Amino acid sequence: MDGLRAWALTVALSALAGGIVWMLAPKGSVQKALRTVTAVFVLCSFLSPFFAGEDLPLQWIAPEISQSPALPSLDDTIQAQLQDAVKTELTNQLQAILKENHADGAEILITTAILSDSSISIEQVVILLQKNHASKADSLKKSIKSQTGLDAEITAKEATQTNGGERVESERITR
Image (tube, rainbow, N blue to C red; front, side, top):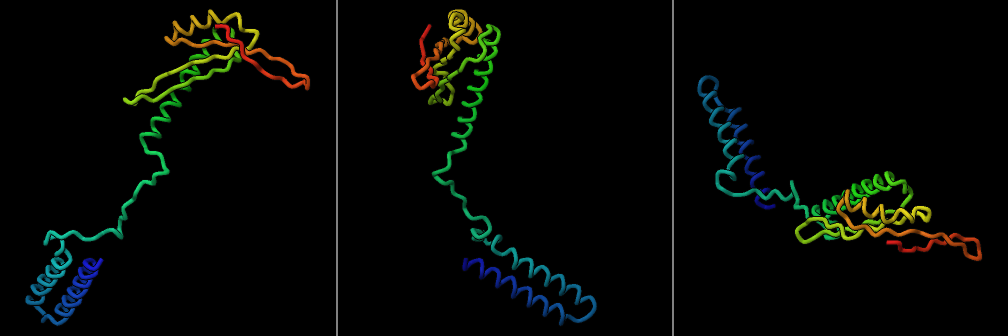
């Protein structure tokens, strides 16, 4: 910061000296020459740190911005967004297959992982069918395998009643 102050003081004193010389210059052709020399002198004093190869300490202009460790990195954020996009797209494809097979209303659970090479792997696909669609499990599994290449676990949900009248869902694996 001291270097910046010294440079600013040099520029200010050069401008002051140049102004005084400019005012005291005699009229005529000598005045034009002195004004040109004075302007070049002030400009050189302004640019002197750059000619000397010195760097100006400009930390006050652009302080270094450090990334907080609490914030996720950009790569992690992009990977998470891509992972969500894959899940959403796969869910849409599976819903279309379920609709084609008249098995609407199923719950779709997808497990994905990000591999070391930054690719996204689909680890598991589980489809929870409503009880009335349990008979379609085999045909759905074949249809999903042929259209997406994935082996899906297909489960049918059964609804049961407790003594208090509350609805409780249990799962029964059909295939």
